[in-house]
Image 1 (tube, rainbow, N blue to C red):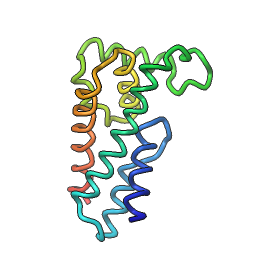
Image 2 (tube, rainbow, N blue to C red):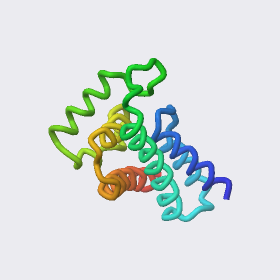
Image 3 (cartoon, rainbow, N blue to C red):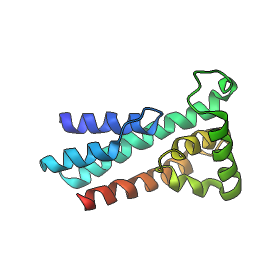
Length: 138
């Protein structure tokens, strides 16, 4: 049970602005080979998607603080994500698993007020694909 909880928390934090490798955590828990891969996939995807949802809420409600020094995304990275988002639309959320651009994309989704259900479905699908690839590789 501790493996699932640790994986969920690590995946959640990795989707926010905490520099943790949830892929490495998933591979380590999978290497123990006590857990069914489908459960590991669901736990990692759920935690990581919920972490991205935290970014969505931050973009939706906290952008007024973007000029503060403690705000987690720099102005340049937020502008880059906004540009991608304006150009390619909500489908960019399938790329929310990418390092460096994924977190700002999920924040930009909140800024642009993407509806919650499409956000969760697209972000979750992209993250599940990434974790599925990790599990296949291990």
